[in-house]
Amino acid sequence: MYALNNVSTADTYTQANTLVCPQTIKVNLIIANNAALVQMADPSPGIVGGAGAFRPEVFMPPGYYNLARRVEQVRVKSAVTGKAAQITIEAITPFD
Image (cartoon, rainbow, N blue to C red):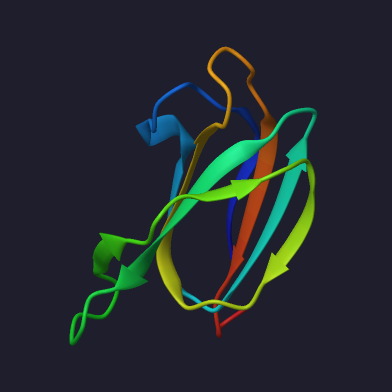
């Protein structure tokens, strides 16, 4: 399992708000107080643990999200400039 706990989003994607999570099969997101934009990176074909291209941004209002997806990275940023969201990301692998 990989986790990014109670981080504040920024107006741009940052390394601090990116969770590298090879072989993830399920992502739990808790978004508090403000909306966020979320991007997930697909696996690279034929490369175990290699992140491919990021999917398009998804707008997510505050809430709890349980996403069954195969991803290698998850990154978040503020949906509205200057309005940080508090976010926790939990990424679960087949080995958890």
